[in-house]
Length: 226
Image 1 (cartoon, rainbow, N blue to C red):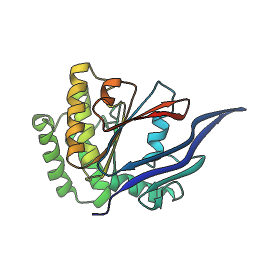
Image 2: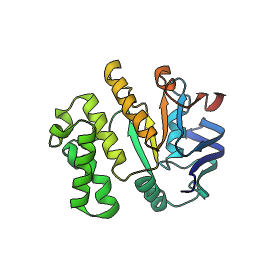
Image 3: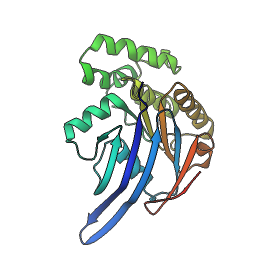
Image 4: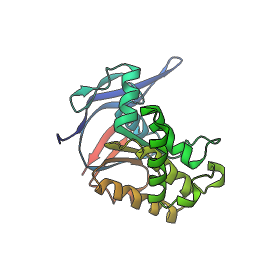
């Protein structure tokens, strides 16, 4: 298997509000290898989430480039970015983003259904993932009937349903108590050891201690790497 690499070149993002221009990201240069575990830390407003969204093709930069292997995902069209997100990248967010009217099983199945249209196959895979994450008896519960930790595990299962190479996590423990957060971190560690590239954005130092590499951001810039 050819080694996957995620790379940015002078990546920048700015927003305009009336006459005010705000730089969320300034000329970030970064390389991430297949199977690496990377933590990006820093205070709120440092640009961490903006960087994660650009790495995951959720947004386009104002300038600079993002390469996944040799493909510049900053220059492809919206439908091509959507295909890459659905097939190669999994997302885990602080607020879970589960559909409230769907059961845990249906939430997990949805990306697979969108990708290949095979509902029966998606059902079987989703059940297996939920069982692996300790939710075998919660598959038919809606998000409002689940605890925060259970909702986050459903979100992780959903992120894994299409077997992505890369897992991007934006404050995955931010809404959880410390004990539940540690359980979620342990799950993410296990997924990384299984071979997935793991990129976690957080303001919590505890998460960084588990990563292979730590990058610190302030004011839209990488200021420290170790």
